[in-house]
Image 1 (cartoon, rainbow, N blue to C red):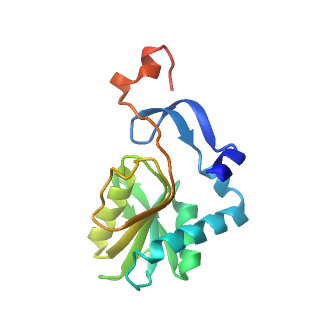
Image 2: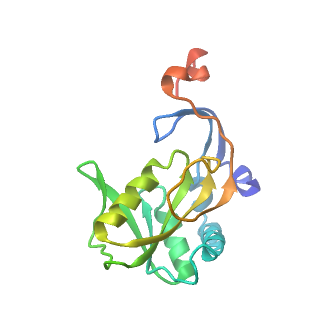
Length: 180
């Protein structure tokens, strides 16, 4: 967490998260990942946290949703010595594009920069099911869900951060006149 604070990645204010929820704090992981040496170090640390969850298997690929997870997937894949892939939305559905493929039954790890509600991660898991891949584990640099999200596979993160989130209609920041 000190690295995020040191790099100015922990922001205070009123934020609209990709989940649609509002929050008074936001972790801008890109502020940390913009330094290649730090990104490599964080990816290696996340890979180490994930290893015990893999049951001795090595993933054939590490997959993340674009855009926030791309660098995380690349660096975790570097640590595992496998391919780093990412999914994108096409016609509203998360899918592999750009010629990326997975073999049926191929073991994969799904990663994110930060998980709050798990929506993007679930979309990647659905895409992995569509390709017939076998998800071994889910990892993230930051767990903002405080462990409340279950993906049906082991899950690891580097940092757990309790950040309050609110639906727009119940947001005390909005009620106070602030806008995200």
